[in-house]
Length: 543
Image 1: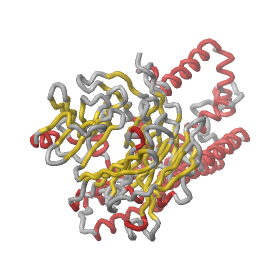
Image 2: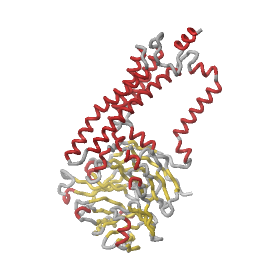
Image 3: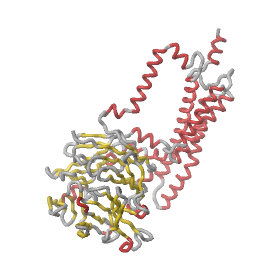
Image 4: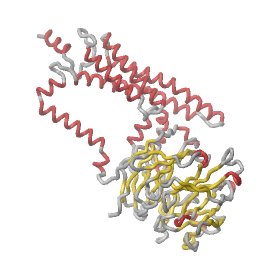
């Protein structure tokens, strides 16, 4: 009787003993087919464009090594779990040996600048141990998938097929429950917030990596803008401090599907691209010299391109100097050139106005922040004023103490109705003369505010999880770990009432922290920029 029972357990695979050491049964054809299937899936996963180089090393070495270990273990009838642990450990160590060379180069660069590297060395040691542990976890997951697959396609009395025949009702309920749970986990945003906005399109771009040493300013930001009706998207990537004149830029047409459009023969020479608020046109500064700073008075020119009709013109006017900060269209076709080299004390703007085919210019030495949607601007001169863009008449004058209260930030946003001024984490209410500081006591947890929608709602992102990210900064150097951490700590973008912080709308959870949020001039679309790409949303009209 006992011999029959032992024979049954050896000849009929179950999930508990699938792939384990079985003295009387060698590697079966069924198991070999499972290994070949998993090998094909592994190749597809590792070669997917989602992963960066370090992640491919970890996935490729660990998963392929685990499959080879399973094959060897089943051939010689060893324990599959032990083989998986060994394969995962070796895969993690080999991955560290490969990517660790970049870590040493980064440490040498920091040391050559006279920076303390003790903290970074400790981070890299922690990242090395975490990478090995993560590789072992991946190996055990692969072993579990192998066992489950062998059990699922088995034909014995204890296989999945036999279980479904013996207990069809209970098995169906369990399988349906697992399926419902999986669907719920994949659509948790819809369950938690059924009215949250779903992205109508996602423009996947090359992922921006942010290693731990990015705290010293060595990082790239992604930003951009939308056209008047939201059909065109500008994407820019650059390093703060180096300048937008050398930013990588591209323009995409979003309908029917996002696709890149070439807007000039030499996009690398175009900078400060700005959309027209009256039509599908762009303006940009083009440099024709050897570099941006090569004879700017002679080689810099302003160009306007009609995106619909594929026509362009070169304006007869030029910037007054090379310290251009940005270009901006205002209603009725006027173009503003903002200057902003604050380090050298240079500031002001040039306003170009076209009337009956002729261009005229108005020069100002005051810094300004204009909002084309409200026809109101903010000017920073001897006094800080809110002015009418048509008449230049001052609407509100602020005392010098007000600037100190707002934190003396370089960039301010004005709501379309002219009531709210956003400066960093502070919002000033012009009507009630009150300032609300949205930042918490912990600077790590300060929220991100990105400006106003056409309905005067502030775009708000809860950044409280940044504190945890800071404490676990070494995970930025562990392949796949940052992706998992971003997913676990993901938050939605919220649109809030500035007066009382009441939520009016929200998106579904974002995969990572947004770097910028912009709205089309007519308010019909919103673009959220992240390290992975750009989310595009249709903004529903007010109810």
